[in-house]
Image (tube, rainbow, N blue to C red; front, side):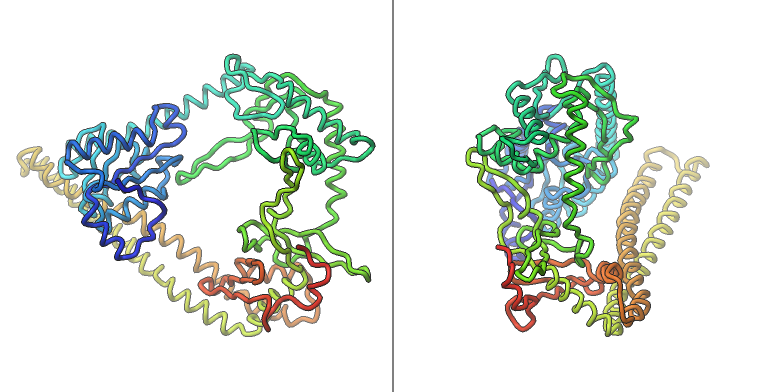
Amino acid sequence: MMTAIGGNNYTRNELLALIPKIEAIIYARVSTADQAKHGYSLESQVERCVELANKKFGYNEGQIMVITEPGESGDNPDRPGMNHALFLLENGVGKKIIMLHPDRMSRFLKLQNVIADRVWGSGCDIEFVETPEVDPNNPESMLFFNLQGSIAQYNKAKILANSKRGRMTKAKNGKIPGLRRLYGYTFDKELDTLVINLTESEIYLLMVDWYLNGNNGKEMTCSSIARELATRGAPAPGGGDKWHQAVVSRILRRECYTGKFYYGRSEVKQTNGKKIQVPKPKEEWICISIPKIIDEDTYQALQEKMTGREKRARGRQSDNYLVKGIARCGRCGSAIIAGPPTTLKGGRKLRYYTCCQKTRKSFKVGTGEKVNVCYGRSWRQDVVDEYVWSFLESHLNDPDAIIADIIKQQQDIKKIDELNKKKMGLEKTISEKREEEGRCLSLYIKGLIKSEERLESMVRPIQEQIQHLQEEVFYADQALQTAKTKYNELQAIKDSINEYRDILESEKMEFETKRAFVRMFISKVTLKENQIEIVAKWKPDIKIEKALNNQHSIVHHSQEHGGLP
């Protein structure tokens, strides 16, 4: 039995080799909520689907490909596993897709129908273990199939509403409706509340004392506290093997240790299957009393000292860093931030860009040894900024070339007109089909169509065509919106070039104006170990990449002074 791994990166020869081998694709999906509520697991789904493939169709394991989708919501239209399965079916790999239940396909009726139409459109069948066979040409079968989808969608909405109402009721009654982890406390499942964890609370009190009063006469920061705890072998939160400065800071900032636990600080909203956390106004939070570890005065003193230190630490401003916000690390992909400066003998300071993962302060439990996530050099800020600005300036001095590139791209995006025409044509066809459906009904009412069966045989194909056309309108509209957004972005650049060129020719330019240029015309700067890569908005398919060790080098001889490892 073959298990598919990865995306749709098949060569034509690989696809051709799979076509005669694979008869069925098994798709199994599970989200955390599904597994908790229904006892689903990927293994049990696959096992039952394999059993059906073997008993009903006589397929052996060599004729089956399994695709699993862990932790994905059923109403997400962009699931990698489902996309993979559809890609294979549409390219002739497999004759059937087998799933446990229609809700494994989707819990959203419209998406369920879109997926089903793609499967049937590729000439393949859909089989479910727990429901009867689905026949797209049988109205009763399709009615049952759509009812299953509607029920799944209703059940999900009902479960979410009931669950939310139950949690809110618990919170209003002074109970905590489930909690993953809160350092210093243990969650009592029987009483639905928090009780003090003696070991962790002692470590927390030690952290507070060190931060406020120091350790053996030495001032302690969040970083030095993390190092000291790691050196002493104190267990890290969650059973990890590292103490992080950020974790210490987060713990010391929490108000819950004063005995106030707030529930409902944020809510989860879902868009296109993706969950996002949205903060709620403080007046909507529910305060639940828990055992306190420190008093309010100690907490306030702690916050004042932390805030004071943070203000003093803001000396390393990143306001004069040209590529702030658009630079990424070429080693690990993380954001680039302002790094610590180096002072040369004459007092001159060199500033640096550095990877945020390189500056994270983490210490190994047991040794206190610093652990870096990203290793490698930092980059001279003045040298990087100078190169990026020179690159942009040289192109802005030749606006005709930029405009030519933009016009070429906009011509490529001219499919906006085609998409508009296609959408209007589809909508017109839908209107005509509805009129055709109406005429059939009129004929039936007038008695010119004698039976319901005859009416059904005439109307059903029309309704199927309407449904298919509506789906095409949906996808055409999505493509249209994407194309319009890109076109408008390019038009804004085009309209601004001459205005910006006048500013560019002025003798003195403010730094913020320079940065506005950079953000307007450059989408991303990637700093690699020995290279810099620039992606221009007006020509995103071209990446301008220069080595750091040739005639285009952005590193001058002075780079050797004050360099960071």
